[in-house]
Image (tube, rainbow over all chains, first blue to last red; front, side):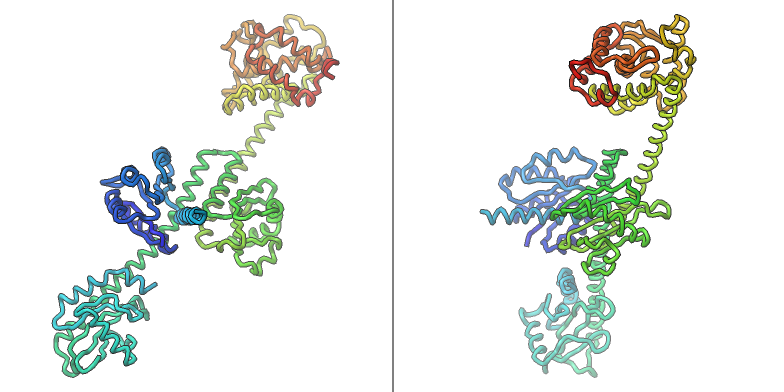
Length: 129
Length: 507
């Protein structure tokens, strides 16, 4: 089962995403900020990391940068939730490898579709070797 | 699902509470609805042995009446258990205690206390389960709201970027098709005004255009008489008989109302192998349809007001040109040429709009010139010429009453100024003459030479260009003339359209 790690300081966001993802058969872990997420990832990498930006003490941006330093060869996809209005946030997201943004408010169906696409591309790639 | 949910609760914590309250019980345990042990204490495996012994005698965890249940295991032990209720008639699991066997007539006092403890703790677990259940319902509801918000923000973003153009409708449909993962999103109106669509095809649809045309008939009639959303998921849905039958898709059609009348519909189509349209799809389509309804009304009003403007302008021009049959079509031609030059000079949209009105209406002031002067064949006397010279200022006086034309009026007022400052009405020079006026001057000069007058027939294109060359720098702005000559070099379609005479070598 694919493991998804959600990082957000708002419990309702985690609750909603967890519900939608679990219904679709994913295993979900969650953290409320970057520090907690980092220690979970050190214990075992998820298949996809979904993170918010504004969190304390460690923000999503700091988390992404820390990941990039500590696990430069990480293979999991990182999705950063950016507000539709704060387009400038997308610039630093674009510069990180295997990191993409998804628009907040997050559409659960768009997210599920995005994940399905991601995993089917992965399995095609591994099938091709 | 229920068992899973109970497994999601930390039942061990409740078990340990019981243990701390309890006395000489052998075991406490939490069992799920299927009879599997979720948590137990006492010697390892002990409780499972008790369960196995009971199962061997056909025990199946059931209630005889409400409250605490008892069952003797053997000569030494008795099982006490209390249901954990997930709702009326619904048992999520059991809270169990294994105690030294006792006869019902001689139950020790502490058994009563134990019964109360089991009852309270079972209620606690059930409450937590229900709270979790309610939270899930709320989370699902919240997820639906996220979905709507996401769509609304997306639509809002499109609105901000496209403003009021017709493209807006297509890009809204595209947002909708992408967001709802629909093969086709279409907007079809009863009149022929709207038949727009956007696609996000999972598989090709070869005759999409035909499908859209057909929809305007049967499906639209169906939707507008029902005045509610029509969802056709099932291929065998009998209502399909009322609709274009050669449409093997899943269909959701939502009426767009203006007042009581259905003016259009929003249609989503999916290939048959896609999931059914759901209630949440329906709600989302509603959100979009409501936006579209407002936008369509706005669009219709804007189209009507734009048409009104054009017609008012045409009426004014008609009034001018009625005075002098030889100038018929002059305003329209100067307008056309000016716009060509303006576009070639890459003017901003706003400037082009001003150029549009200024060039169309530049000669409106001629209304004030006596017919005897305007239509006089042959040379004008100096007095008569003064009348002619007043006309741009007259144009200004007429047009200044229209707020909308405030920035266009200078273009009309100064179209007779000359580059060297010898023109009228104000004798402006060079770049002090408004750019729009300099553009109109070139177009006006060209058309005056090539069109017929009361006193002479129209001259050829080549003669006009030669004359323009001659007066460039004295009368006309060289930059604008360069642009105009570059346009002419490409043999533009208006040469034929306006029937401009050509010298023989070009004919």
